[in-house]
Image 1: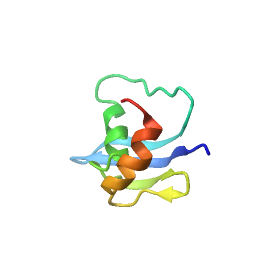
Image 2 (image 1 turned 120 degrees about the vertical axis):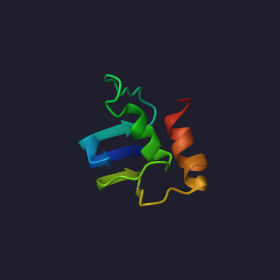
Image 3 (image 1 turned 45 degrees about the vertical axis):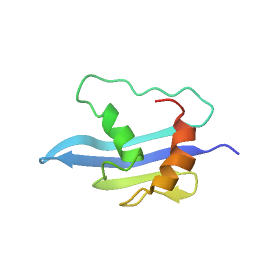
Image 4 (image 1 turned 60 degrees about the horizontal axis):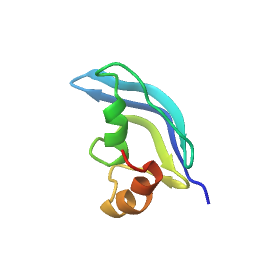
Length: 88
């Protein structure tokens, strides 16, 4: 069973400045995925969203059939997100 992480039009602001604006992407289990960009472009923020330490302002993030809401539980991180992302 393969899983997919999907970002759909995700935006996040900090101090009224966009960190991410309308980001859409799919991260496929078993595939090599890369997020590349200059310092401050939001690469770490993407991981922070997945691990529940940052909350999006708009858009959606899904993992398989699960939609990440305002809160990501520790169980979801340990059982689903961690193994899907591998060693980051």
